Image 1 (cartoon, rainbow, N blue to C red):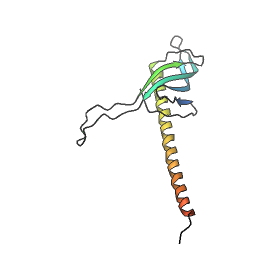
Image 2: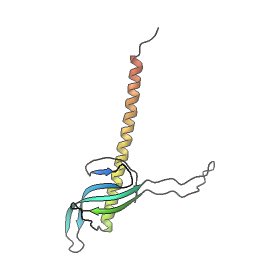
Image 3: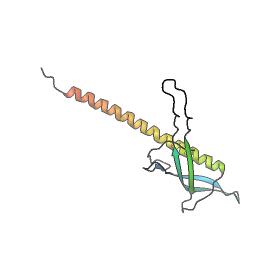
Image 4: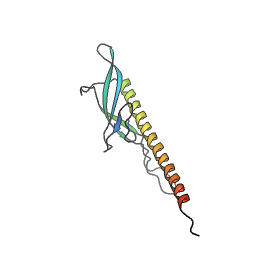
Length: 138
C-alpha cells in the first residue's frame, strides 16, 4: 500500500504535502451503509502515507542480491467525510481508494516526467538559438 511522491492538484484534488511523509487525497465516492445497504455519494478526505518501491542491496561485481527488494506501498491512515468525521470503509472501498491514490501518484509522476522532458527540449532549443545569434569573429 505505498507509492512515489509529488505535488499535483487536478480534478480529484490530489496533493502531497511537502514533507512527503503524509499525503491527502480529496475525492468523491459512492459508499454503502453497512446497516441499511443504502448507497450515497460522499466527499472524502483520505490521509495516507506512501513509500516508493526500492531495490535491495546487491553485491558489487556479481550482482548477487544481498537484501530483498521492497514493493511500493500505500498505507491509508484515515478516511473522513466532508464534516471531518472519520468513517469506516469496506475492504472493497479501501481497495478502490488505494487504486485511486496509486493512479493519482502515477499521473503526477508522468506529468513531472513530461515537464522535465519539455524543459530539457526548451533549454536545448534556447542554446541552439543562442549559438546562431553569436557573430563570427573573422
